[in-house]
Image 1: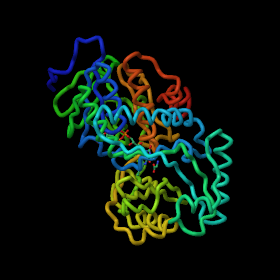
Image 2: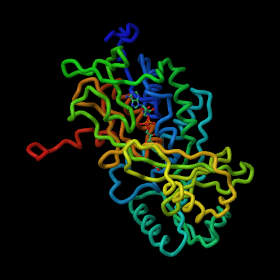
Image 3: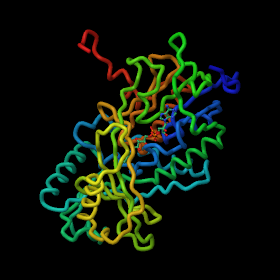
Image 4: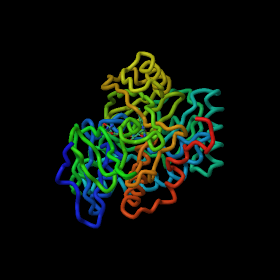
Length: 389
Ligand code: FAD
Ligand code: GLY
């Protein structure tokens, strides 16, 4: 193995190798490069083409909160609050739009059975202090006239917004480059190099790129990189999601809000695309589209918005959410000195990008762990001493 000569710096700021150029790796790289660190990002493919490309871009801290997920709420709400300023700073730094839309999100009930379930969710979220309100069927139809005429009511959250996640990834790539980071595409990290209990760099092909800190942000693939013992390997698995995209007339869109309906959500983009998502499947890294998955999405969307029957299908795809056992991310320092985790963002990685970028960059720069990320350290999964393996 040969050492790449260019990377180690004499500056007081740490040199950083980031594994993964999704929204998480790129946003951390942008922040660190802007703070004066020498940063090199490595991706096995093109930047921003993993889950960050496949996602819906919903910033749904409220409506996606279900029983059992309360502990994630301080993190998701903190990031939601950061999004408007983050989007503005990113647009300024990159010169590219990210299409933050602020119409809010509805969870609609199509019949009495649905209404009972959505009412339950509304009560649960209200008790948590989330800013949700109940809309009558007539009010839902007033706001979204093309929804099915029998719609029974909806939970509405004015604060749950959306961005175009593909534009966010592209803007982060540009912002990171402009801040001075190097982004190596088609450069797979085969191994995290550890010497004397310390991460000293990453191996790409037969080259070792040395670094003071290694940030592991490889999304659903984070547990598959060599060099880490089982105890420090993040337990992240791929959770497959299929989606598709229809083409509306951008001047006469069928929908303005993000709308959730049983089993499906609909996301109207400013350019006239209408995203329909998403399945949740445990299929490993099998990225094939299935008839059942696509049928379920189209049927769910059509029940809510019958006018989609006339729309052309523009694209269909599958991606892999980086899932963990408790559906929360893994953020913070490792037992391996110099190694930092920023992975496992599951269904919320776009929402959680600003808080992850800020807190992980701060951790790398100062060694201080922001209180909001402390509950999400890897050691929460450690087996109690004496427990059976
Ligand atoms: P990724 O974007 O997957 O990036 C990881 C990168 O690491 C990839 O580019 C990959 O090529 C690279 N990599 C892997 N292994 C290596 C290696 N050995 N060496 C170098 N590079 C490597 N979140 C929301 O907040 N809102 C949503 O509406 C939403 N909708 C979603 C819908 C679907 C269908 C899916 C699949 C996900 C959705 N998510 C959503 C979740 C969100 O997409 C993810 O949580 C987020 O994109 C994770 O970002 P990431 O940068 O960690 O991972
Ligand atoms: N957050 C939406 C999804 O993961 O499908």
